[in-house]
Amino acid sequence: MFDERDHFALSHPPSAPSGHLPPHAGEGSGTHEQPAVVAEALTKRYGPVVALQDLSLQIRRGEVFGLLGPNGSGKTTFIRMLAGYLAPTRGRLSVSGLDTVRDALPARRRLGYVPEAAPLYGHMRVREFLEFMGRLRGLAPRELAAAVDRVVERLALGDVQRKPTRALSRGYRQRVAIAQALIHEPEVIVLDEPTNGLDPRQIIEVRELVRSLGGTHTVIMSSHILTEVAKTADRVAILLGGRLLGVRSVADTPDLEDWFLSLT
Amino acid sequence: MSALAVLLRKELHATFTSPIGYVLAAVFLLVLGYSFALTLFATKTANLIYIFHQMYVLSILLVPVLMMRSFAEERRADTLELLLTAPVREIWIVLAKFLAGLALVYGMYAGSLLYAVILALYGEPDWGPVYSSYLALMLHGALLVAIGLMTSSVTENQVVSAALSLGLALMLWFADSVAYLLPAPFDAVAINLSLIGHFRPMVTGSVFVSDIGYFVTLVMLALFLTTRWLSER
Image (cartoon, each protein chain N blue to C red):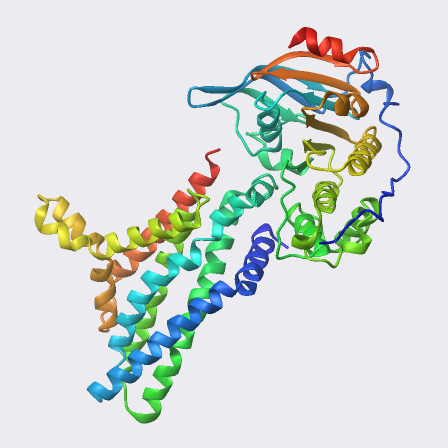
């Protein structure tokens, strides 16, 4: 098992910290720019079970948006619908104005997705896996090597890029999963519980990475840990029992805990 | 590179780096070699008809095991989520797995060409039935791969996938046996569904478009259903 403890410093390209959003992304800023994500009366049923009910929200470009809620609240269902893995039972969901069902393939091209389990192909080496995901996302051969080099550097994967993915530790697996989501420079990056199963140092790394992505990308992440979302996101939505209970700016809500408790 | 080519490359790599394929191919060729030697010494005729029937049965037993991993393993390892959220159509994912499965099965069949070469060296076989038998085997193999893919797409349990696939292939094999129990026109349907009923004429050298159509139709139906089930999310 390869251990990543000696390689904590992820290299971030210069970008605006997510706390300093572009003017159009701020709370209440009147803007004509299209939101990155729009959900309208989104509902998902599994037979008689309602996983998500009438969820409507808009996520602005360049913001880090946190989805907070306990297990079974509908976070993963929403994220999977956004990634195109699940189709809504009712309602509409769009990424950069593209419907996730009607314009499924163009919508998926604008999105990078990291599933909760950080799945990787065990028979591939790290670099080979990233090349495969890059090709799958339509990168031309002349762009591919540079794109892989870029994410390998950004996620500090240089030491493990020749290792089989099955030999990686949980922390490195998560990094490789994030790297594959970034390889095609998507407009929207979706992370399902990205800090699950990581040790405290790895959690800090992922948090820093997510914040560094904000501003240049729209980042949507789910978590069931309130402090995690509070430290990472610009705005937070609380989900419970498949319903959206509220959306607030983290900066404007000094006592996020009280607000959470008052809603749940 | 097109999405299909990217996916096919990945599937071929996964197929030919897994030991399962090689182990099953070795078993296939070992049993076949044994049967070939036995029938050759017993009949003393340059005839491969027994070997083709042997390959028919062995394929029904082994191809479900070869194919049980295809989607079931992707589901178990959660990698199916990566594929289905990538900007590629489900049909390309299905076709890539189908073609990779075919490559392995046809590779196995290619090993049996050795017996045809041995017969050509020491006898004068009738080549017409040999060619038509290989056509029958290729169609039969394609159908079994497509069925294996279909059953693998409905479960994450590989054993269940293999059992379903084997069950379906056996039901098709013996479909004509139940015909006498059924009223018209269902008896005719059962007879026409019979796998061996469409395989046997080709092995004896009679190639009918209806037999080829049977295999092609069922392969397309299985691939269509696999794609549909994959899209139902």
